[in-house]
Length: 154
Image 1 (cartoon, rainbow, N blue to C red):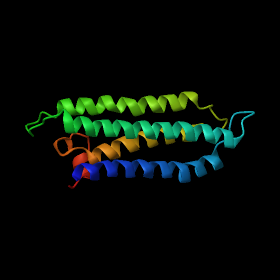
Image 2: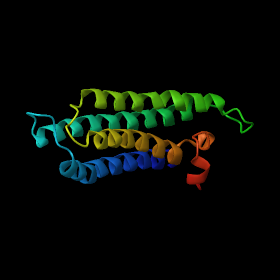
Image 3: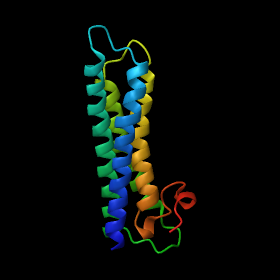
């Protein structure tokens, strides 16, 4: 039952980040961004949403993969052998990083306030991956994620 609760927690954080992107970030970008010449703001925002959703989805997939690997592969006995888990966590962090880079690369740079969109790409992907893994890692890896001992009380 605890496994289902962790997976639901991962899904809820992912959906929360998605709604934050869709209802808050889009409103901020509508008022701040001046798209490139010849591109309408609606079309530019559609491209932003596309790459933001890809970043959030890849972060969620990386979190689920982290959970599955933690359940199946790692056998940490509490004696400080968490380094291999931390290495795998950092390697999986590369997946959201690649999504961020792709989003930045394929989004046409606007005339004004483009940096805000790129900060949102970073926040969406990293926040989704970090919070889901810090709060819902398997018990034997629950303190492997940096800072998780300050966020996780169960």
